[in-house]
Length: 295
Image (cartoon, rainbow, N blue to C red; front, side, top):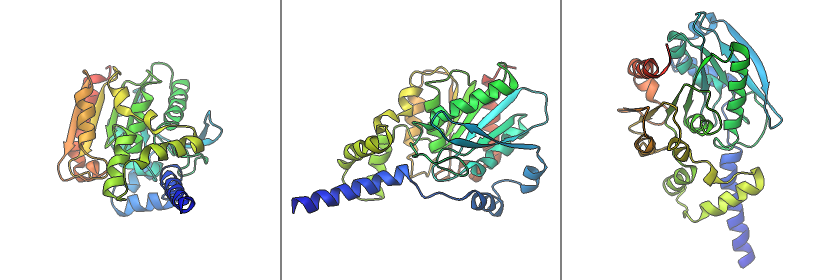
């Protein structure tokens, strides 16, 4: 009986760990087609924008599939966009349009284990932050040390851009859209509301994940970075987000000392703030960057 129970619990822990480490992913082609069909971005604008596709080699032994969209303007500004969990770089095209209008070159890329990038366990921002640092390296090497770099992330991408601030001070400003404040707190919320399982499984699941992928859930805590960083941050969150609770962005905004702004979007669910009110979203981002980026 005990063996059966342990086997059952072990199976649940492996399955829960797999939800993070090996998520079901939207294919690159489907992501692009969905974006066009749902009107997330203008296909004509995308096709008419000068582009460059290339790979950047990660320190962890795989390639990161990148695409650079050029603004054609002389300003030495680049926005690096980080997509969310289970999606890919073309999910970021709705934001790319906005940054192109603001005069930025835009670099979109697939996280590890997503899109056309190499296979490695998804880590909810832990290893992804080091990949983002490699992307920043490329921008500095390409455009020079005076390049004004802004990072923008959605959901897991939001957590990634915040965690990245702990290891890299070359970013002028960061925008975190519907980021979770702490992975453990997020999982407590999700395991209760979506899977109806006891929360005591989370530390055990963290141990399983550490054995399999080398990171603890406690190390994925954007709020601990936000508390210390001096980089300006704009927090964005939909008021109807039940997947990543809106209060998580409020908590991070409250704990940050200064150089901060928050935009909570009425009627928006998870990762839908820009789609819900694109003009207001663009206005808030433009005002924030205008305040904190050097002229």
